[in-house]
Image 1 (cartoon, each protein chain N blue to C red):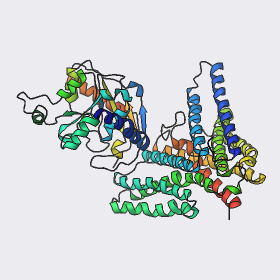
Image 2 (spheres, rainbow over the protein chains, first blue to last red; image 1 turned 180 degrees about the horizontal axis):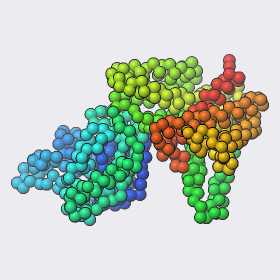
Image 3 (cartoon, rainbow over the protein chains, first blue to last red; image 1 turned 90 degrees about the horizontal axis):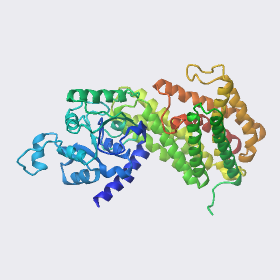
Image 4 (spheres, chains in turn orange, cyan; image 1 turned 45 degrees about the vertical axis):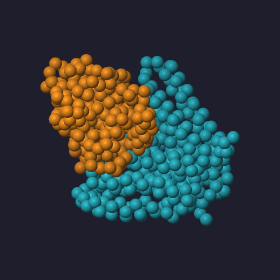
Length: 223
Length: 315
């Protein structure tokens, strides 16, 4: 039942919102992975980011696509938790490590790594959506990337990381707003990055990849 | 059998347009066949996009009038959205933009009601007075004048001007027994778009002397005058089948449309140059965005509409 709802949500609701109300300008669509495991590393401005990224893939891949999302935010009440886990299909990530012990494992003795869920997903061959900024932050301003993603890739060096730069979604639905305003949005897909042997190097590559993508467009500051 | 909402002449005209398009596709294929090493992808994309646009336009026109209005409303929505995505808007004005979008269904509703008085003042008067008031309620004064004026300019171009096309459908059918409202729309849209193509082709063939080098370096006097001559000829030939225009009037329209179309084109070019983009979007492969395609219509539609109204549809 939940699987059907997820299909309907992404096949109908999300497509109407993303394609008719917003409208996307996707560059280098051919660089998207055709199958998992893979990590999509995108900048984060809006709740719409996840919807847009999932809508880039054909519906048959839907069960394979899992966004990593903050546990403290999305599991804060029952209804939201049901929606986030079953419809959006998130993998909860504990931003503060101590909470993971209580919620996921119900007082397990050994603390579980906050990214354990993501590692399991990659092992299953899923396509993981990851926002290295960790939060939406100020609309249309990129924050510094956190190194959690390097940790993930270190454990799964065979998995390609595809940087994706998005612009406009923070204008359409920024943090703290509930009214969606239609704007055309840009989605630039970068070339796949691979584990380079060191976390610092990898993070540098990722930041550079993202800057290069951002440089492909002409974007005004939004204030 | 589906009951078509248009007169037989309109169906013939649509048939003519599709034959032209077929001819264009054949020419592109022949060119590619004769010069296998040259890349005609851009041209091919352009022609393919024309197929898509004309098929959707035809369906919207011939099935029924309400569908036509919804279609033109969608075009206004896409154009306004493209415009607002291009220009620097203020973060404080998010909610004002929603009101700007809401003016579209209202404007097209007046047309559906055939309420000319409201149609003609809604954007220039009521929207013009309302938007700044809504902005004042938010209270951000930095860049206020720029924000208020760019927003209203966008509404005038993408909603007000463009909606004149739809009001042609609301004019009394009995005054144009040849083609009805759909005949007028088809006549205007065909001449405007064909003029764009003709100016482009003449410019490619003979273009030498630049006409507005600072705004649009590819536009030449040769292209412009070739377009005027071609459109004049087309207007003279087609007018008797689709419009109530007398012969002298059809010649005047045959001059007004290519000049106005050219001006609309370079005005949007100037806006794009100001913002620093080449195309207004990527909705139509080979053409760019929707504004790139309807730029000429934003000038020709109001001028053609008021010409027709003054000479043929006054009560």
